[in-house]
Length: 216
Ligand code: SAH
Image (cartoon, rainbow, N blue to C red; front, top):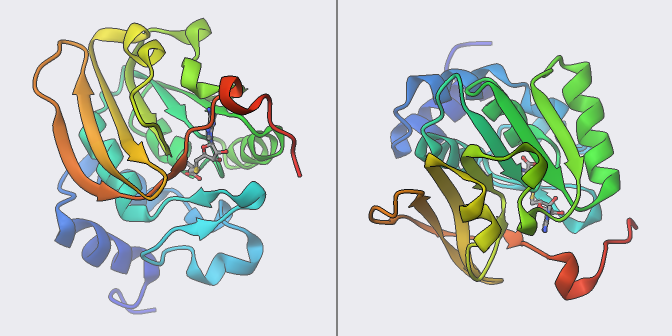
């Protein structure tokens, strides 16, 4: 296949670079992780397309650009510990694992967490720790985090996330209601918040609001 028809090259060029993803470490990580391994097998042909794809339990694997935008804003260093809220397929955790020392990824659906863990292990992402639980409480066992990134949207950033942040930590998360949110960057030092634009993620659902999940 020619360079410009290769789906990975197309993603890098048109969906990422052309839209402002300039962090070379992020671009390299996006090029390296085989996204097709994280999408349902019937959708492999669309793995690198410029939109989200459905997962089990009515959830979605985020569009590549949004994963890259989130991780670029998180400004991960090789020695960082990251909390990834909303494991889903495990794709974002895999990309983050190439940028940080340790990724703790938390998912409320046991079935999604198990399948993500299986994929991550099979592909050798050994610095990802998969946890089943309510990520709206963060994951205090492994705190503090240099960065907390979320693929599930909350009306307000949970206090637990701020509490579990390291002194120079960053939170990158969609904030807002079900139908539209802003992707926000918050810093532990309280410096000015950044708004990365309008996004649409699935909601962050706390056990408190609905009780523990039932895998369908
Ligand atoms: N990062 C994922 C995207 C998954 S979509 C990927 O790369 O595939 C967001 C995920 O957040 C869903 O799987 C959903 O079940 C999960 N989620 C929603 N509320 C949650 C909560 N309170 N704690 C943990 N996970 C949650």
